[in-house]
Image 1: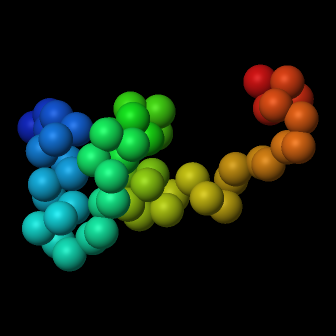
Image 2: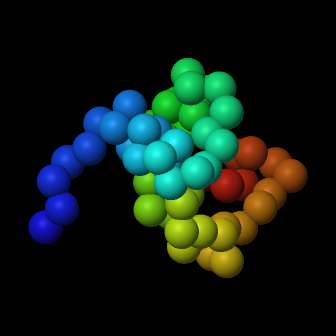
Length: 58
């Protein structure tokens, strides 16, 4: 099992790997709402259903 990493640690790892993480506070907020591995590896992209009405997505 991998050890827990804080959002700041996750951002540092991303930067060290050459990723442009942009605005740190916005990126950290995004990580809070998403999973690091989903974001970095794109696992969830094929399964996301987009809706124009936000109430339908709930």
